[in-house]
Amino acid sequence: MADVFERRSELNSQRTRLWNLIEQTPWLDWLLLTKRPQNIHQMVPWCADWPVNVWLGTTVESQPFAEKRLPFLLQNAAVVRFLSCEPLLGPLDLSAWFRKSGLYPIDWVITGGESGPRSRPMHPDWVGNILRQCQRARVPFHFKQWGHWVPTNATVGNIPAQTLKLAEERPVKMIPYSNTTGSSNTHSGSGYRIGRLRACPERSRMGQSPLLLMSPRWSPRSTSGISVNE
Image 1: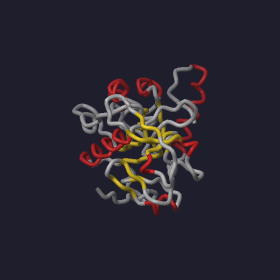
Image 2 (image 1 turned 135 degrees about the vertical axis):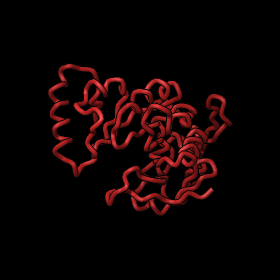
Image 3 (image 1 turned 60 degrees about the horizontal axis):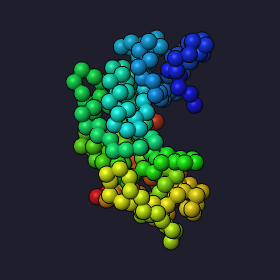
Image 4 (image 1 turned 90 degrees about the vertical axis):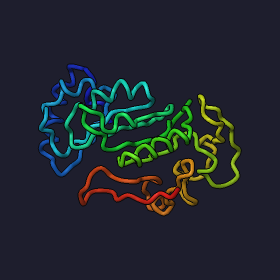
């Protein structure tokens, strides 16, 4: 894992090796995720003719980062442009960016909460709102994880919860991951909820993510979508 667009001159030779490797492995999809999309245009050897196996993404934790980074990401003609809204740290409105005039469209949105010590909670409404924005725009959406803090209605069992008040959102009852049962914070067994949207628990028991609507790659390698019932 690395941000290949970090501005460090000592990495230039490694970057050149990476670009060559990408072109030599057309059977692999390379997901290049960066927090520095302003550097993409100066560092890649491609302009309008990007390799078909490059998916280009940027991290969008909150609205200020969306406004700062998306103009740079969406200038690029990669076959897939994706957003990693993880860790999601606040409400996010992407509706103006899905197909903005003068820029390339957003092809895929990933969401997830923060993990690890001193993690900040992710309100379920933030994820649900992004999901509905993606549905309206018909853009593939992937829910990766709740992170360290999990809503009580996404868990099983009688586990003590804390009532959290995040920004201007409604209070929500959540539990820290360390208090949950099982080996994964996807909590397989009884289904998952983001607001009123429910995903299929069967897919998580097969080791797949609990909420996956569509994949942006229409090929035999794609992960097929699942239905979500309101």
